[in-house]
Image (tube, rainbow, N blue to C red; front, side):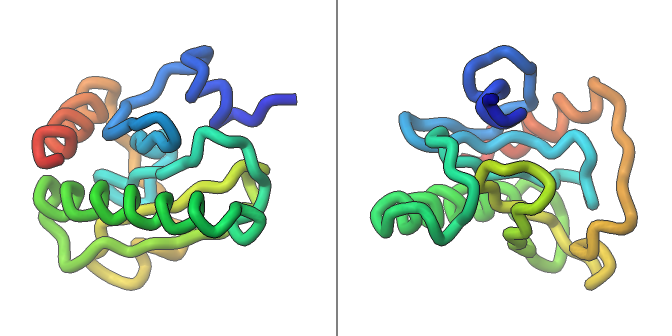
Length: 129
């Protein structure tokens, strides 16, 4: 069965897309820790980060870096945190989270934004890529 991320990649579920190329996609997390919380996902459905072949892994990190730099320009923060947990969805994904404090990356405090706010955030980040 396809993961929720594969369904997003295939256009079956909408997302607030930040960036995309032939191998990867980045979109806003709909259950964000902080404003601008972005997920970076390989289009190839692989369950675990270190099961990716080395080339795909390195390209995922490079794509994530590009998105993180744009995210930092668009969302005022001290830094962009990166986390790979991988237990909640069996499809590799990197969390890029604008951080003001350590609590922002702890996955306990969640933010809530309207659809309009989410679109505004996505548009702001996209304009920085």
